[in-house]
Image 1 (cartoon, rainbow, N blue to C red):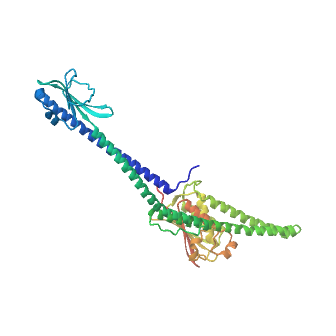
Image 2 (cartoon, rainbow, N blue to C red):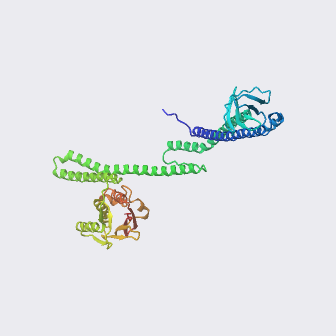
Image 3 (cartoon, one colour):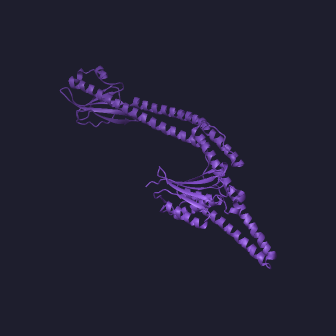
Length: 457
């Protein structure tokens, strides 16, 4: 099981890890660069001393060279030795030294400098072959690395102390900074717990003056508004669906009870009750089908589109409705060009039937319906269906596409329908990247606008 870690702890660990790694890398690089530079200086010192001492023995007799001459040719703590070609020591300075370093002499006029270690101490040993009238053999210079090692050890010690102090100081600062950093989040989670107990109605009332947390709070409030709206819609949907189903079920129940009591021996009661029950069952069946269709239309994975001429389909629907409703006048004002659009033919027909049927229901006086189509300047297509009916109050226009919503509730049941048609039609339009809206003048007319965008090839 994973252990739960706080953000403050993770921030503290991460900051300490970063500063530690950074400091170690920086210190290591600095010490390495310094050691390389100092080691080069040590080699240069040996090379210069070896050159100066070699010059003494190449240019003057052995007996004429004094200790002062040798001293001035060497750096502090350096030693020199003079050897024959066979490697036998002839002279050593300082005379009192007891340093014995095994040296492999090479017949090379150029200086050869090699590291050596004796009893835990490090040295650089430079050797050179001399060939002159005054000396024929070898000369060596021994250079101790005590100062170099001391400087490097001191740097390591100082780096360790400074690193420890830096990490400690950084840890303290990170600790207090992490407290300040997570404080808004702590307040945020505190209010979340409050909202969890009190429900959707609560919102985060918090200002942290930190871009990220303020954006998170704003996003959370927007999400809660969307959830509340979705929850309310779902609740309303269930209530409306229950209400729509309750009425026909009660009617059916009442007539079945009537049949059970008197209908067995009364053909009139039996026929009337069965007829009403069948009609109510049809209403229930239609409601269930529309609910399933509305749910199915919420996904576009099943769509099978084909490019159709929208004008042809509009005319086909108008001709069909003209035969069914001969008392209505259907006027077509269609664009002269072919309005081709990729849409499932059945879906487009279903959408038109819903909007036209809705126009017929609410235009029972003038009975004049106009359908127009137009190619827009931006390449899109707009279809408009206008009736001369009762119109829609301005405050209700935004609600007509809601499920089970009816503008004229007193007449809706007599006119038929379950209040789902416009919701289904809107879903179909949106499935094909279209947009639908309504404009209305109460008491005069209502127009449904359907717009499909221009599609990229």
